[in-house]
Length: 197
Image (tube, rainbow, N blue to C red; front, top):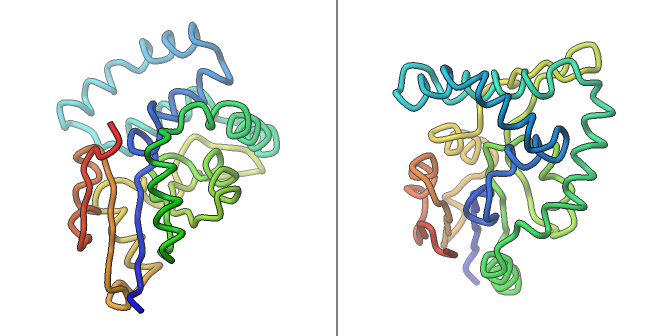
């Protein structure tokens, strides 16, 4: 019997929206979200122009909205967001694909640049594995910095290879929707780009 594994990007592939923006909006409201992005717009422009890294741009956004927030309060917020908002953001076609792969005996792994804090409970409920960005915690509070590297681009490949010996699988399915997923898609025996739109 062939061994199968499937790696899914989360934001934009499984969901209809970027969950980082949605988790910020859930915490602070739309007005503060837009004001915050106005304040950080020079950095976001610099990222788009390739002057600064995806990680640095993301850390500035995280620090602005969640920096110094006690970990317990942050996690409670993330858990509430996962419970109340994520189900409405999920693409039904993606959910159907995941279930069909599970029924066929494939191991399912979500690989996301978003923080594990607001994705983990959804993954646990669906009984799938998770590889995601980890946030730095100091003095029991969120610093706004990322622990290690943002799980994006080549880092997705590095994290997958660290967790799995891909030579042990006959079929490797990969699903993504942006250029940041293309390194992961290159691992696949069967790759899907923007499959659920």
